[in-house]
Amino acid sequence: MERLPKMSPAGISTMDCKATAVQIPLVGLLLIAAALLFAAPAAAQDEPAQDRCASLANWTHGAATVASSVLVEAGQLKVQETGLGRLAKFSGLDPSGHAATEPNRPFCRVALKIKPSSDSDINAEIWLPASGWTGKLLGAGGFGWSGSLMYPGMIGPLQEGYAVATTDTGHSTDGGSFALGHPEKLIDYAYRANHEMTVAAKALAASFYGKAPARSYWVGCSLGGIQGLIEAKRYPEDYDVIAVGAPPNPLANFNAAQLWPYWLVAQDPARLIPKDKYKMVHDAVMRSCGSQRERDEDVLEQPGKCTFDPAQLLCKAGDSPDCLTAPQAYLLQQIYAGPSNPRTGESIFPGPAFGTELEFPMYASEKPFPNALDLFRYVVFNDAGWMPDHFDWDKDMTVASEKAKLLSVDADLKPFLDRGGKLLLYVGWNDYHNPKELAEYYRRVIHTAGNSAQDSVRLFAIPGMGHCFGGSGCDTFDKLGVLAKWDKDGKAPERIRVSKVKEGKTVQMRSICAYPKVHKDAGPGDANDPAGFTCSPK
Image (cartoon, rainbow, N blue to C red; front, top):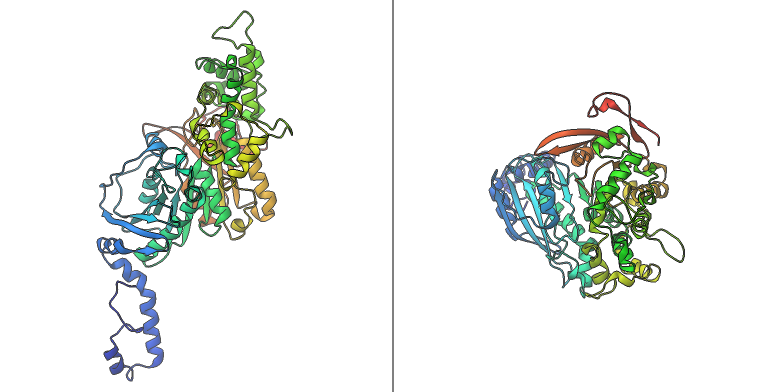
């Protein structure tokens, strides 16, 4: 509206208004004013995209100011990806589930600086399609400790006509050291940066298009997953439909479980298992629990039913590559069990499922897993030299839960669900993050919200998928497409189609049923054919 010439409500100059007021009935003037008012958004969009983009250069809203606004022509996008965002791109898919992307469509690329506190330094980018906007906004969640913009999660949705937003959560470091002595930056990382980004993105879209987004979606996995839950909990009106993958929730408990194998080895170095032995263990698990098809594909369909015991592999005549010593077998048993409170016996976080053994070496080593270590160093104990060798799983865990509570989400999402919000949960069975934990959270969300939530929440546990992507099984599905269809039709998905993509080509497909149902082999035939599976109770 500010870009139009200064006009009277009827859209004519003041001098002309006096001359024509006696000639046009009052009702006619009101109709003209209404018509021009409702035509304003269209007029804003009729202005060249180059001019509309340039006009945002001095835009401000609350704590957000524009650092730059540039129209990027088709195929001219150049970004520098870092960290896990780069890994996501190199895996051949972006976090929203696009297997490949074409050269970018023309869009207005807006960089924001957001400073909700004196110690805040939040960078965000909002990408606004120059034409063909769907009227929707997508928030793209981050990975790990963030510290960079999730460009891979923006490119695919942009191609479909979404306005897309992402943030570095307020810092540019790879790990968690930014939080040491900076409580405001920790708040930005935990929840404030994403909320401020979302509010600014909606207002920016309204300025660019002449109207605010009609619907808003969130897609994120790992950190992006818990970010989505935090958005639903703290700011239930920010997003209408949210996809949450493998959320490490509560983060302190999950990170403690990632340090558990290291702690076990630190107590007795004889427990350390050589990396080469994990392939032997994994093969033994598959022989013990998998059907012929599952062994051929290296995917357990229902790992929760596996009863493998590492003691089966105990050495009978001294240590060798094809067996486990007693301390090594004990380590595996404890990894599968997960840490628990030694005083109460309560589980802190469930151990990984059977079939994930090839993931163990990064945790069960002589060095603690760095992402998890940083939480305890910089958020819990404020000590950059802290090591978990003597961690007290009762007292220290209590302290950790309190210090990191802003990075946890309880199961009361009723305000979000009551306003019509929809929540898609997903996780891979080959993830170190056991889907049992997310299934329990799903049950608590449904119980807390009541029967009205039955059609507003869905959980999909994907056999063979690793952490957000990768693994031996199918790992790619169009999350954004599932959200859009659910939002449009109002019918919750009962199954999804998941693919395995290699070098841009789909080489395998599976139908995955919504929890608690599981897909079962319907008989001989093509395993890629949806008719080859049925959804059945466990």
